[in-house]
Length: 454
Image (cartoon, rainbow, N blue to C red; front, side, top):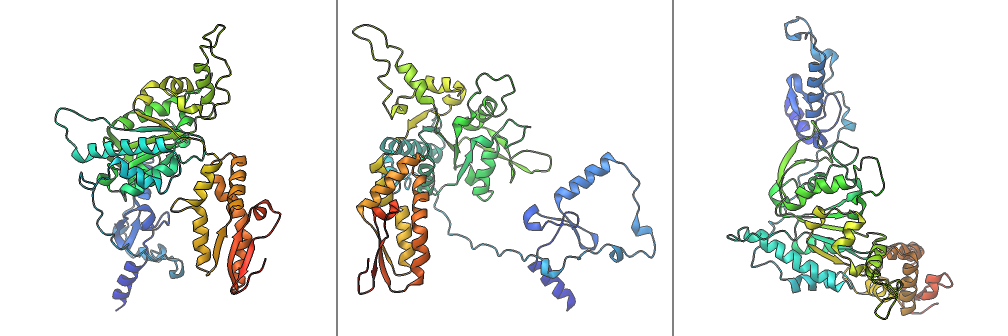
C-alpha cells in the first residue's frame, strides 16, 4: 500500500534536482540514478566538466560493506509542504486551419480587417496587406517552377506611438500565425553581453510551442531597428551596431540557422535546433530620430540664388517630411546597404493629429474607452463621454508627444477615482465624463437610478 502511495506522490508532485534543487518543469527531463536520485542535465554536465578538469580517484561504495547510503544522503529531504504540484496538462486546442490558397484573405480583406482596429495610416495598411498576401502566397505554393519569388520583408518608419507594433500584432492575429516581437537594442555581436541575433528566432520558436515547422511560417517583428545603426566617429569596437546588422543578414534572407532553445545566447549548456528562415516574414520598425534633418539637407541641396532656386527653409515646416525618405537617407543614417537590400518593402507611418486621437478613443473594436465602459457595465453602470471630454483628452495626448500610448496614461489617471467610488454605491446608474472633469475643474455627472443628480 505504501508503494502505491509513493508512486502516486511521484506522479502528482514535481521531481527536484538533487544538486541545484530546481524542479523538473523548469530545467527539463532529469537523469535518474540509483536510489531514486534525480539530477538535471546542467548539473550533470557541470559535474562531468569538473571531473575532467580535476582527475581524482573514485570510491566504489558498492564494494564497501555495511554502508547504507540513505543514512547520510537524504533523497527526499524536501518537506511535502514545500513541494510544488505539477501543472495540469492544457486542454488541446482545436486544430488550427492551415493557410491555403483558398482561405488566405486577399489584400483588400486584410486591409478591411485592419481598419477595424487601426485608425488612419491608410498607405501603411495597404502596403502591409499586399506584402503579407504576397509572402504567404509564396509560402503556400512553395514552388514556382523556374521563377523563385523573393521574400517581402518590410521596413516601417514612423514616430513613437503611431501604431507600428499594433499593426504587426493585428496582422498576426488575423492570419493566426506565430508572432515574436523583439527589441533590437538588446542584440549584440556573439560573445558579448546581450542577446545573440539568433535570439529573435528563439523567441519565435517559444511562441510556437517549440514546433519548428509552425515557427518557420511565422512573423518576426524587430522593433527599435534604428538603434543598430553604425556608430559615427567612434574608435571602439561597434558590437551593437554594424556588427548586429551583419549578423542579421543571413537570417533575413533565408538560411539554416542553429537556434538556442529557451535562451538568448548559445553556450555549451543550451540545447539548439535548426530552423530555416526562408519562409519567416521579418518586419523591422523604428522611429529613426533626426532622419528628418538628413531628408531636409538632401531636398535643400538645390537651394541657390536665381529664378529657379528653392528656399532653403522650404521644408522646415513640413511635419510629415519623413514620407520623402529614400534608401540614400537610410544609408547616411547608418544602415548598411546589404541590410536595407534585404528589406525591400519600405513605407512610413503618419504622425497622429488631434482628429486621429479622437478617432482612436471612439472607433476601434477594442478602444480603451470601450474597455472601461465594459468594466463598468459589469457593475450595471453606464459610462458616457461628451464631446468636450474627447477634445480635452486629445489635447493632453498631443502635449505629451508619445503617440497613442499617452492616451492610456491620461485615462487611467482620471478614471481611478471613478473606478474606486462606483462600486461603493449601488444606486448609481450612469456616469458622464466632461471636459471640465478632465481639466480638474469639475466633477463627472452622476445619474442615480430613477433620479438625476449633478
